[in-house]
Length: 224
Ligand SMILES: Nc1ncnc2c1ncn2[C@@H]1O[C@H](COP(=O)(O)OP(=O)(O)OP(=O)(O)O)[C@@H](O)[C@H]1O
Ligand SMILES: [Mg+2]
Image 1 (tube, rainbow, N blue to C red):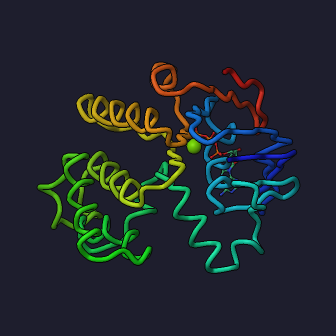
Image 2 (image 1 turned 30 degrees about the horizontal axis):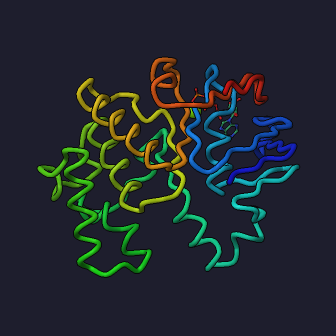
Image 3 (image 1 turned 180 degrees about the vertical axis):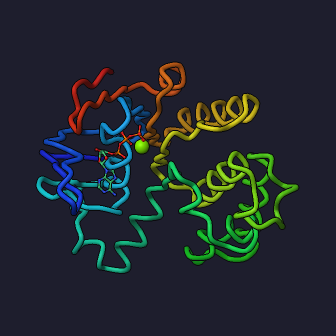
């Protein structure tokens, strides 16, 4: 499903954040990206989501080359973005609607689903993340953990094939962490592809069957 061949990436200011990555992930894999601050986990997730593109090398998703020109095609880009969902490390960057329910409905609406299906997905996701009482609140005025739950709900509402998450449990209380962990275990059983960056070995041990260890922009080990 995901194939990286000799991928390197440098930020415009010259910081070489990814170097010579080779990685193949099958559909249904659950993968933890582990490594110290600044090793390239977030950069790799951004690349997998088509927000940035390899400076050299190739990224293929279901066999299709993902590069700037492929994603210029609006139809292809829409299809790709509905297959791969992303919960940001900084969720503030991801929330912009006037209310939580509009925020969750936004993606499904973009996908052109009918209003009955949209409202079913919104209700399910509110329930799952236990944020129903927040549904009419403005996302920017929520606490950090509440925002993270909303961001999660937004991505789940898209029902992507692959769910990518950047430190998804950071800043959440123990109860919410537990619920999300159980939910992710369920997604894993349902053979959704899960890829997440984390600093928690225990989270990785519980959810991931593959641990990708990074250091200074390189993959130094893939443990299966
Ligand atoms: N927008 C940017 N412009 C330039 N350099 C960047 C940018 N974002 C990240 N970097 C650099 O790229 C490298 C990888 O950063 P990245 O954010 O991918 O690390 P990370 O593994 O996610 O770290 P953390 O565990 O702290 O979240 C670091 O050296 C970082 O300083
Ligand atoms: Mg990061």
